[in-house]
Length: 433
Ligand code: GUN
Ligand code: ZN
Image (cartoon, rainbow, N blue to C red; front, top):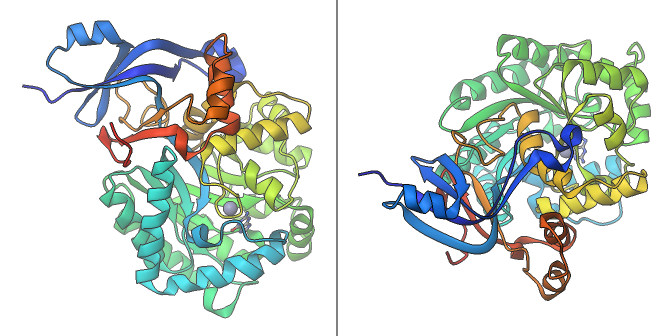
């Protein structure tokens, strides 16, 4: 006797990359189904056929709602949950005024546990099932995050944020302690259940060359790990990096020279890049993580999606909570569309949805595991109501095809559109199913 579950609804999956193949890379079924067995997707197909071939399966019918892979947020800071939407500052002042004082509170493990749980419940209610998150300098903030994700059965990636200069005393480690603590956390958590450790130097201004070198050495010892950091977010920051690392060819070189550039590297923002940096990132297949609500909220600049994708860069999409102004990957897709428009390129809904699912999963080197509705993948699924508010419903009613029906939800949707979220085949949101 198997314990199969069959979800019914519209289904959206990707056979390829819509930036390469166009919208035809998407596979849509107006009345489809996803068969779940042992936490994985066993089959995706036509609803009637799956019902006929799996009569024993427990059926959950989501009607006209869209079954998609759960969203994958490729860059966030869970410790900034409580300071999201803090007014009036640009990057460096925003870090000093809001971020660092809040991150200092994570010396208290109980506070870290409280925020980790709150953050993960917020993203699940927004349909996000995987995130790559920064923690704080405190190892206990990593323990809190992984413990909370493990309890929810989620696939997440996270690491201790390392800083040994240009941060308050209470938020500084050293080159040696960053190496030692990161190594111990990696040993404790990496590969346990669905958790992976990410080596996490915050960014070049808050690390000495010695600390970057130590973390580069740790990455060389654990090349299967991801590494995450920030790159060229604001012009003031780029100028600061130049003054701190006078011998570096450019911002990217501060990482490259210390063993922190590679295909498993995730480089948040990547807005103000020189041609050499762009070429190098493309050549290596590194992950460039676009954080559009953050870039408008903090006033950072306009990411060159078309140019970077056109030269072969791998791009993921992210909220960058709480520099980003939303927990929602729908709102994040909308902001990516708006930035695309400001740069003269209208991103297609297929491209936006792919970025928020399979594209981000690819930058995390988790393609095949998450981010797509394909047999063998883990059954992390978001169920989206394409008529979740009167404004969206009246616009979607005019749609001629899937993309016309989806785009109003991309542009105007929020957590009200997420009617259910499944993690490894289990429903986790409170919505009625
Ligand atoms: N650069 C270094 N740290 C941060 C951070 O926490 N948020 C953002 N948006 N940029 C950063
Ligand atoms: Zn960030």
